[in-house]
Image (tube, rainbow, N blue to C red; front, side):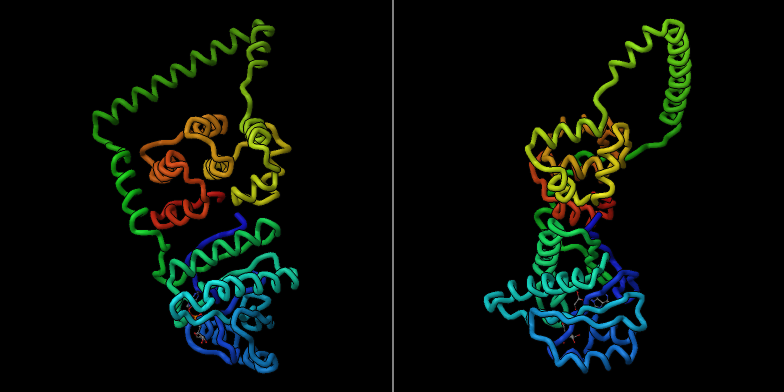
Length: 334
Ligand code: APR
């Protein structure tokens, strides 16, 4: 998953570079700036003194010293006034300039805090959206693992309306699993039934194997696999492989494994990430899941949230991940 949104203290991140939300002097401060300088040690300040400051929207790089990260990329976000002083463009520039530096220094992984979303007063939801959109745009053309690190109790900034909508959708569908005795018994019979059924299937297969032509003709009717359906849908949508896996927020290596192995068994979030990237209908999504051995279930909030977005025709994987994160569910593309 090239873009991961996680909750952590950025100074603890084991990545090639962490980004610091600094000020123009680059001589340290409070917030994440203070935390990074404390964790890196005095040598970081000594190197910062040699940089001659940094303009807003720009970025400069130093070593990481006492941090696990090899580098610290210092960028200066805009102080938010009213949103009409070019704050959006300057904030975008912080992410672009930092990513360009990370690429220049051959970083394979980089972690960002929410720049300007603290002391500099940028509204968190908007700051988060700028971060996700700018990083996503970069990842469409570049291979890098990028973390957006939310701190402490910072949650996802899901709009109130969307959050209420989905909560209602879940309540209407979420099937609480009741484990009373009666159901327990029914389930046990079901299991026994399936054991018996399996025994019948096994005896059917060993009968069938006595007539090889029957078995081989049955095997020749094996359905299209998940991997075959995925590649077929990519062709039908007229998009390239990389457009598909980038939209699905799936890394290139995983995609090439799926392409090479016609019987590859993906995880359920991976199947759904591709269904979103290909903008499949609910029926097509369920078909693709079935080919990978899964189904959408109403006893699983993750599935209900996915069903909500697909049935509404909303295929923005990061908007969906924001909601999944807000409901403490695993993220797509994982
Ligand atoms: N790890 C990850 N994120 C953190 C951490 C941490 N250890 N500490 C704070 N944050 C988050 C904040 O919650 C906020 O969402 O980083 C985001 C940016 O907040 P600030 O650090 O206040 O940075 P910013 O809003 O860009 O203001 C920069 O503050 O610290 C001074 O010297 C700095 O003058 C500059 C100004």
